[in-house]
Image (cartoon, rainbow, N blue to C red; front, side, top):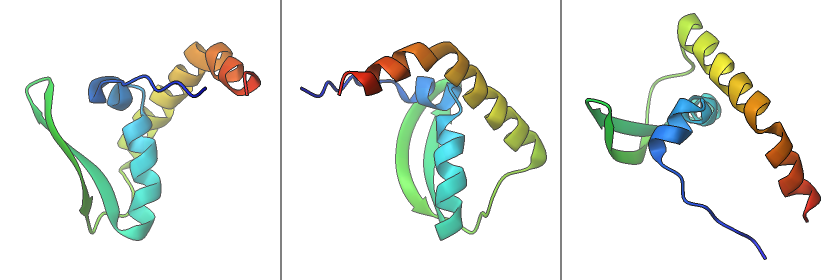
Length: 84
């Protein structure tokens, strides 16, 4: 049985996953947009965009966040795959 565990956009963004997804979506002129009010995410939606990639600083931060996420979650990710 598949389990689906809802997660907060804040966690998704904090893990660098929004950046990672948008890197791929930018190839096609799309992006997932997350609107924020202070530290709270108030809306999220797909959008067409002219952006094609991110700045060097944004990429460095994105790679760092994703690497940290993988380091902290590798065991549970492997367990998820092995349970199938």
